[in-house]
Image (cartoon, rainbow, N blue to C red):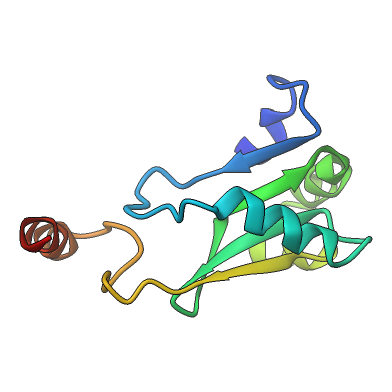
Amino acid sequence: MGMKSAWSHVEADYVLFVPCDVTYIPSKVVLELHQALNKNPLAEIAYVEMNGVALYPFCLVKRSSLSIFAAHLEQKQRSLKHCFADLHAQVARFENHALFFHSINSLDELQQYQQLKFLH
């Protein structure tokens, strides 16, 4: 729903969505996502894959995707993976061997992140 509603607040042709708990954003993420979108003329969206893990909510979305998002929501289909398939999603792959996780979802991951920051 958030991805659909974003278009009522922006005038741009693209929106970059970044999950609030992502701890590492590659410096060239927007460029890589845009290049991934351009690989397929049917693509409406490109998402980040970090260390082999798909981060569907970390994505660059074209405004033209709005009708597909709306159709999925009307059908009570809330799976980003399924919606992205209909949007001919492309992938921007990143590797970061310094991090053991891509986001903080538990106290254990928070402690690991704090320790990693301390070591660097």
